[in-house]
Image (cartoon, rainbow, N blue to C red; front, side, top):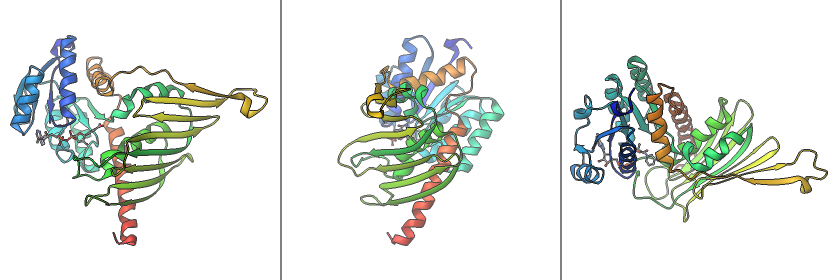
Length: 322
Ligand SMILES: NC(=O)c1ccc[n+]([C@@H]2O[C@H](COP(=O)([O-])OP(=O)(O)OC[C@H]3O[C@@H](n4cnc5c(N)ncnc54)[C@H](O)[C@@H]3O)[C@@H](O)[C@H]2O)c1
């Protein structure tokens, strides 16, 4: 496909979608695509973001069905499946934000629509494009035990979703990706503190290959923490998504004494905006007719695990009576 043939649009230009729009507009300046427009049910928002990016605006995504070849869908999660299926059925390639959908059944509808038309369906698990993760990925061998903390001050967005589907899902996708084994057991606790949804949660996830992940996610912290530490054979890994830091500490082969042989390898970071890298990967998989780097199956696995964690939280809450 000639680059210029790829007409793109962004559906939903709220707090994250406006950054999708900016990045799509930048790709146009590089001659890669044609950015047709943005769509938002809030007309004022749509008009403002369109003006910032020199494109048309729409308030009903259906108007774009015959005008584009690829879309970013950045609307609230409960709308993902309906909007994505309509575009996929038309053969339009879709990059849908995480979580892929609200339910596994909705995710399956999206997968089937993509398979039927041959359109690409990619899921926006953005942390895979964090420069620290990009630098670290080639050093990951066989993670055995994770300690993960993702804490934020209380947001004024996404309060219709619990902390598991909103933020823990980033780490659930990461462990699925890095461990690459089936989940064998989930234990979890979570409580609402400020909203009526779960605001803080902890999950212990075991995989069939023996790996264990202990994950804490909270949106009622006093500081922003995005830290993952894990142990794999002969090395200890630190990954900080917030400061874009990654290091691998290992024992030099043939060291006479462990303390003398320890080396800390602070990985070199290529500081590309993660969303830019994600959108470019989406466009490239279309132009090269390749499998999307984050598939619908990846998105479904992360959702399945998140729903499993929520189920355990609900069971535990009934014991706590909160
Ligand atoms: N990957 C990440 O790191 C990340 C971060 C934040 C949000 N998200 C995901 O992005 C999505 C949007 O989140 P947000 O924080 O930007 O929400 P938001 O509420 O700030 O923005 C959503 C926008 O979609 C618009 N909208 C709602 N229904 C629509 C429809 N039917 N057609 C067109 N526009 C519609 C709203 O008017 C709003 O402007 C969610 O799925 C969320 O989970 C992902």
